[in-house]
Length: 404
Image (cartoon, rainbow, N blue to C red; front, top):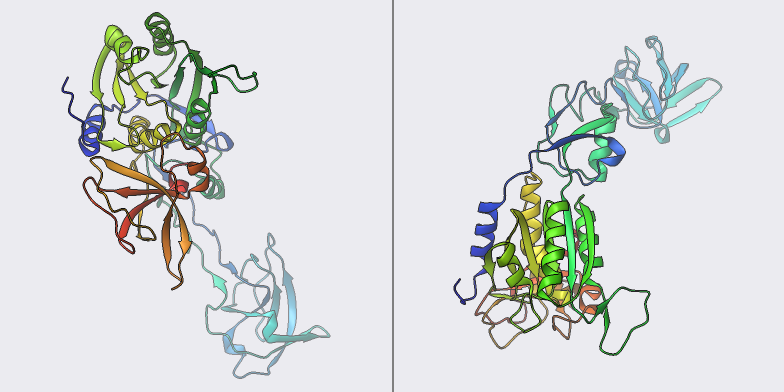
C-alpha cells in the first residue's frame, strides 16, 4: 500500500463504491421509527384535510348575503371542530371554530375580530372574499400522492405527518449494528479513579451519541489493551456481532499501535492515512468480511473523520437517499496566513459582526485533542488544501445540527 496521503474526495469515492446497501427490512410501530430509513415510499390513502374546514374562529357565511359592510345576520348554528353542521340557511351565519367543517352553502369565513355578536345575531364589519379563511379539501396532501420517498430518514415531523394519514407502522431498513472498540493501556472508563498517565474514555461516548442519532444500534466492546493478540480477539468478537466495526486509536505507526497489523492478519486494509486535518491516521478495511474503520485516538479527529467519512458510508449502507451533510457559504471572521498541506476542518461558530452579517469565528486552539472546541463550536469550516484564508472570505460551513 502506498505511503502517500490519500485525498479525502478519493477516499470518499472509494468508500461509496464499496458500500453495499443492507437488504434487511423490518416493520416498526411509528413511535419506534425515529431515525430509521424507509424501505418503501409512503402514499396518502385520502386527502388531507379530508373536507373543507375553517382556518379561523369566526362565522361561516355566503358572500352573496353580504352586499356591504354592516349587514346583520341571524346565527343559525354553531359548528365546533369534530362536528358536522347542517346546510347553511340563506341569509344566516354559522358560528364556526378552527377546524370545523364548512357547511354546505357557505363560501367564506369572517374572522371573529371583524364581527360584532349579540342576541343571537352577528354584524359583519368586514366583507371577506370567496374562499377566504377556508382550508380546502386536499390542500395539504392529495389522495394517492407520494408523501415520503424510499430512502428517507425519518424525523419527528415525518412521524407526525404519517400519523395524520392514519399510518401506525412502517417498513424500514433494519438498523445497522455498529461495534465500537477503544484501544490503549492509558484509557479507562469514567467513574473509576485515574491512575498515573491514564485518561478517561471519551471517544466511545461521542461515537455512541453520533450513531444513536443516526438510528443505529451500538455494541460497545470496551477498552482493549495495547497488544496484537488482544486487538485480534476484540476484532473477531466485533465481526461476529456487528454489521460494521469502528475502533479508535492504535492506527498510527507507533510500537504500541497494533490495529493495522491486526486488521491485515484477519482481513484486509483498503485505505490508510488521509490528507485531512485532523485525522490523518485513518483506515478502512474488512475483518472477516465485515467493514472496519480505524479512527485516530484524538477526540476531535474521531469526530471529524466519523462525520466526513464514516457517516456517509453508513448512511449508504442503510439505504439513505441523502448522504452528504448540509452546508452553507458563510464569510470568515478570521484569517489564516499559512496554507495547509491537508484539507483542514476548523471548529467555528456563527457570530454577528459590526455590519450585522453572520461570520465564522474560529476557536483559538485547533489541536486535535481539544475537546472543548467541539462543545464551543456550531460546526466546521472547510479549508481547501493549499489555501490561506482572508477575512470576509466565503468558506464552506458544515453545521453540527446537520451531523447530529
